[in-house]
Length: 341
Figure 1 (cartoon, one colour):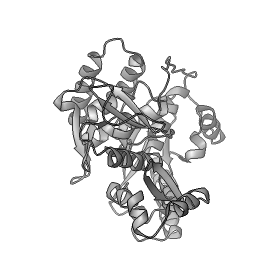
Figure 2 (cartoon, one colour; figure 1 turned 180 degrees about the vertical axis):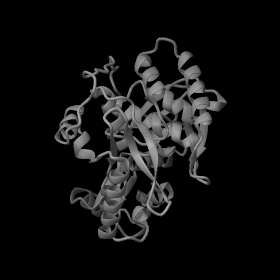
Figure 3 (cartoon, one colour; figure 1 turned 30 degrees about the vertical axis):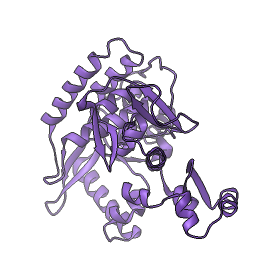
Figure 4 (tube, helix red, strand yellow; figure 1 turned 45 degrees about the vertical axis):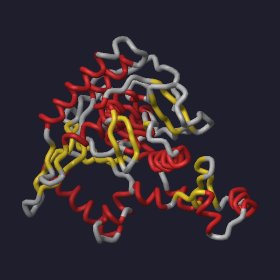
């Protein structure tokens, strides 16, 4: 997600008027679907808006709210902070921008797009991203993982842990840094005592694994847990025919099998294709899979978003390949507080 690019596509009423538009033409563009009103006085081309996922739309709405308020006192929080911190907001579409301050009557008025929160924040609870004040990574995760749907909470926690433990320069995962972060998170949650959602928050924190690269992998391993499979190894290295190191998403050692989550971007996103055509990427992936299956003696199971629509649909998909959980179905259930997202 390119936050500066999103900001560049955000246009104020004054900017639209400077291009020759009138109030009537702006309203006509809104009615006919050429423009989207992001916030009062702020707009975006509808075609560009349609390309944004939940995270991008939260960023656009947040930038619009801050642009309208021109206030340095408001701090983005909850899902809005998560979006600015480049964390996933999987499977939910937040309707409001979330702001936190020490005063209930801050400068930014509440409306249908703004939810205000009141909290006592320390200096370490606040950081700045792309010129916007947001709650820190740890504060944001603590605020959310007990209140989001479980799939969303696990995806968020995995990504947050990965952000502190993945070393891009060496392409390695720092397990020590990950565990230090988990310890600090435990301390933060402990200070919240018996707050609503704390049981889920603690479970999610202990379940979090920053080796999961994408929300699809996070949700897959959550569902494997719910269905009674053992916890899979993540990002398992396998040596290829020329000594290269390939990485498999999930090692289902108790079955045994390999699991690969395939989102469409793997075969369509130019950045992920790295100059290859889609056809070439598919052929290369087939050759890779054949080698892994032949040398390890394990089947390679593939699934996408449609297969993890629910634990039941995932179970059916795995069962179609003869893979069933070795232990009875496990039920993970928490009494969820009423969500504001």
